[in-house]
Amino acid sequence: MPKVAGSVKELLAALDGIARIEGERLVVTDEAGLRTRGIYDVIWTATFSEDEATVEAARWIVWEASQAVGARSASIQDLYNARARGDYDGMTVPAINLRAQTFDMARVILETAKKNDSAAVIFELARSEQTYTYQRVFEYATSVLAGAIAAGWVGPVFIQGDHYQFNAKKYAVDPEKMTAEIRKGCRDAIAAGYRNIDIDSSTLVDLSFDSLDKQQHENYVRAAELTALIRSLEVDGVTVSVGGEIGEVGKVNSTPAELKAYLDGYRRELDARAKGAIGLSKVSVQTGTSHGGTPLADGGVAKVALDFNVLTQLSTVAREYGLSGAVQHGASTLPDDMFHRFPATGCAEIHLATGFQNALFEHPAFPAELHKAIEEWVFANCQDERKPDQTDIQFVYTGRKKAIGPFKRQLWDLPTKDVILASQAAKVDFLFKQLGTPGSRALVEKYVKPVEFHQPLPEAVKAAL
Figure 1 (cartoon, rainbow, N blue to C red):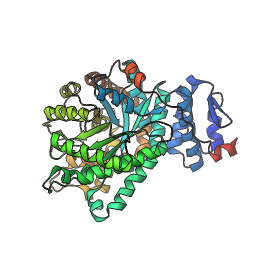
Figure 2: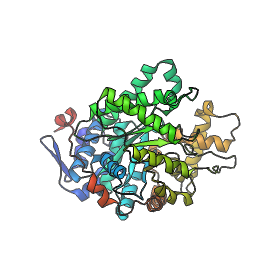
Figure 3: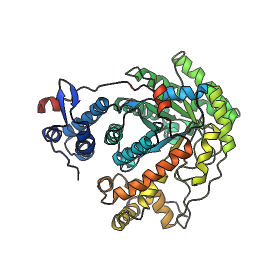
Figure 4: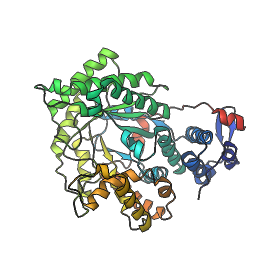
């Protein structure tokens, strides 16, 4: 098992012969050793060490190592610009929410991408997921980049903040306070190395108004405000890819008229704040899905009436406005025979989360005793979220994601994880093929040029040296 360093000196000793520090740079002297041995100790230390200075040092090492080996955090903006121009089609980029086993999942996803000669995949985490998975932005970015290093990945690594969402109830009480939370989230994400952020102010849409512009007003005003903020935070000459949203997932399907009202208002508001600033690269819409799927009393998931015509129409409208297309949320629990249809709609991006979580918890190799412990934790800690008509099976299905943080170390150290990860890799391979990403490496590399960007050497590392 990987070792968790208790001090900066112990951490640096674990890299002896693999990497060294010269001035304020990390120099990798044994890339194979880093990939197969050193990175494991570093990422377990970054995730589980109880010494704050050692965690900071481990995160710095991962970031600098990613720069050294060419697995750099990047924005997907220029690839999506190419899609908007019609330079390519027939591909929907998968955006995968890594809630559990983040390092290992990132590793197997990129190993699978290499086998498919693909580079079109996004790693994301929703703002709400940060809380219950115990993964704040600095930790998440570190885990993904470490996974890329372990995979021997060379090329852009797309890390995305998903659903930077406004809480409508909080906003109604204090709009400024709620907006300040999202502003801070954007600042933190960019500081952590994220180069892709999805702003979800669709929760502020008010259908009681008599015009689409009034209904979408708070949505597009806040999206424009946050886009202007993000543009002011760009630190390395890279344009952060910003996504918007018009339909809260799980509610009423979106329409072309709504999308036009949102995009027209958004452009006016953004120009008022930063004339000519680069706007959205994509927009999320509602087509009939729901996050996590709808669990049935027998443990299954309800069938979804996804409207592909809506997705096609909205993707076409989005490209008329210079965006890459529409984004499909809540898709990971869809039947396998649906996925091949997304590229034909012009859907730019598809978000996949709960399906991978389910594949972990429900795998035959998942330890029964750990499964029981997680169920007991859900019953003990999530009763306030239980709906009156839920069966125990439905309650555990909807609540077990909240156990990912409390059981994070057990999930990372799972003795049977290799068998489970092999199944996850097979699913990823299937999705890549259905979504049209195999062979996309050359396309991605044509448009996306990751920028080398270094972080300052932490004081604790200087002291240890």
